[in-house]
Image 1 (cartoon, rainbow, N blue to C red):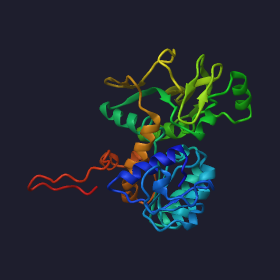
Image 2 (tube, rainbow, N blue to C red):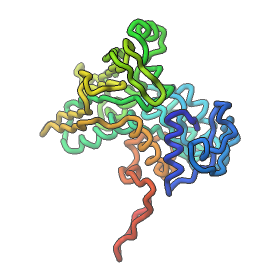
Image 3 (cartoon, rainbow, N blue to C red):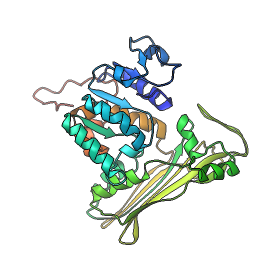
Length: 345
């Protein structure tokens, strides 16, 4: 459901997988409704006709929703799907861990899913993996965590419609005006990532403080992405940060720079993790950074089968076994050695 840039990439990946069969697709754009999904994605016809109304979708094990970041808007889509006994996976950032940020909606989604014996999951790279499940896993290497600090640099050149919420491609004056009107909001998902990480560590935070998104780079040369061209004098990167506070101290410190980057930019490349533990400091660094777009697609499609197998109700990525969401791609099961047993995926 939802055939924007991210939805198309997810659908294309699903069509190549051995563990999934795509049986339906929906989008509100009249230009794509009625088209064969396979041909729309640039491949061979597969007999799946894109419809405009979710009510016209066939019975299936799972619905993957790639539409909006606002959980209030998304709930009107998710609840009817759960009531039709679809398991549901969405890349909506606010669905990743909504128990603190949207407690009433979280409870309603959880109750509805349980009543129909299905599961609903918010997946994706961030939130979902990079700022919650991955650091939570790393904390297993120390007995008591004092603080978590993460700095990410995220290439946004593959994205489409969501770029407007970051203010990329605006002048600084246009950016200030758009931010004051609530049109530039930066990253959705800080509250959810911090909430999931804190819950996993057993921390009852005093507060989660999300700052304002700020310009980081104004380009002096054209920068071209898949769906946007940024001209000289326009903002090509922004920075957004959030903090989790416990007993008056910042214990979770997250910051992301989103943009179209060039090697000459002063913004340091790579992603950095630092977990200060009682016995040791755990540092993890990716010198080039985790690609946000590709990681989001992978997290969604690798979680598809796991959602169907998970316990009913609202779950987060951290609730799923690592084996269940590990990359399997197009590979089939490898024959086990004689006498060995193969666990069910």
